[in-house]
Structure formats: C-alpha cells, structure tokens
Image (cartoon, rainbow, N blue to C red):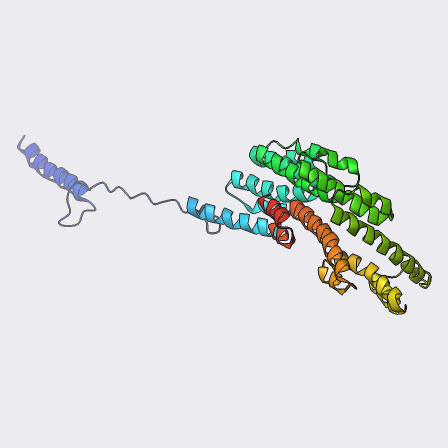
Length: 330
C-alpha cells in the first residue's frame, strides 16, 4: 500500500504537467488566454479596368445637349440631324415637324401636311398652303378651305386685290365683293388686254376717261413698236437675248431705233428685277407706264415668292404699300 502511494503521487504530477503544457502551448507570455474573434472588413468588389459603366449626364446637361442638336438640325435643314437629339423624344418630333413644315410650304402640296405630328402645326400647314394656292391661281374659292377665320379673310382680300390688277378676263372680276375694286379690275383688264391684242376699240369700255385715253395711246404706240420689232427680227439670223436685241436696235435709224429699244426695256425691267430699265425709255409716258406695269408684275412675283418661302424680307421688295402690308401680315 505504501509502495502504491509512492508511485501514484509522481504519476499525478506528470499528468498535471502534461495538461498544462497542452493548455499553454503556442501562447506567448502576457497573451490573453482567450483569443479574440477578428471580423475582417468586407472589401468592395473590383471590376477589371475598361469595363466601367459610363456616367449618365444630369437633366441640365441632357437639355443642353438636345438644344444644341436642335439648333444644328434647324440650321442645316437636314431632317436626319434631328436624330442627334438623344434624350427628349418630344423635342426630336418637334425638330422633324419644323423641318418638314418648311419643305411642305415650299412644295405647295397640302397632302403632305398630314405627316406632321403636332396638330396645331398641321392645321397651320394646311391653311398656309391653301393661301399660297389661292394667290397663285387667283382663285378666292380656295380661300374657303382655310380654317383660321382671320387668315381666310386676309386670303380673300389678297386674291381680290390681285384679281383687280391682273384679271385675265372681265368675268374674273365678278368674284370681287368690293364694287370699287371690281370696277378697277374691269378697267385694268380692258387696259392691258387692249394693249396686248392691239384692240383700240376695247379702250372705250374703260370707265375712267383718263385711263381710256392712255389705253388708246398705248395701243397705237404698241402697233408701231411691233412692226419695227418684226423688221429687227428679220435681220437676226438666230435667237437673240434681250441684250442682243438692244444691239440690233442700235442698227436702226431715227425713231425706229428708239421704238425698238422701248419694246425691250420693259421686259428687261422684269427679267432683271430692275425698274431702272424703264427710265431709259424715250418719253415720260412710256417710263410711267413701264414702271406701273412691270412694277405690278414684280409685286406679284415677290408676294408669291414670300408666301411660298415664308420669307418676309421679300415683302420689302414690294413697292405698293397696301400689298406690302398684306404680305407682311401673312
């Protein structure tokens, strides 16, 4: 029994020593017995370079980009440039409408107005095309297709004024509601038709006595000029320009040369859009008549061009104040 105790005590000491070694194994002096749990901070996921998502501009930058694209498209007049408007679908449609609208007015084709997206612009397109057609064709019935009441009345006023100056038949004047304009229309028709047809008897149908006398003098003068022009034409071996005919006129003598030039200057005044050619004519009456007739033709020319192109600057070329005002107000 005593021997057993002697061996048991040293054995227990050895066991306790081994347990202590296991417990403290791997620990430095001064370390806490319990090792703290360390939670590592999660790092953001990184993507390979070259695949970063582009930053979308804010609303202010988007509006600026679209506005610049809109201005560029309108300046170029190329409808494909409207596709450069990136952010606003509404602005892109407006861009295409504006460019299409300008082309349609120049074409004079009312059926194309239907391609416009904006209903108000579509209605305006129809009205503008109908007004241009009415003026070109001198047909007040076309004005009735215009929806805008103010523009319809303006159309009727313009067409009636033009008819009163450039009626092709006396019956054309019957559509004019104003008695004064209707009488002027008939007088103008007889005046110009008499000069063109060399029918001096038709001058008696003019109600204004002064205009009737002027009509007879004009017809008499035109008969002389035409005869002289025929002679000048016989001397020409090929088709001549107006400037060439002026040279031929110089080969004539006396009054024949003067009358020949007087026949050319009015046409030159219209072709060159320069009424100063009228001032080269031989007498004051011829100058006055040339300026009146060719001036009226040029006024109609500039009015029609202005309506077709929506260019108000052309209205300033019109010499008649009343017609110019109507042109500008259109």
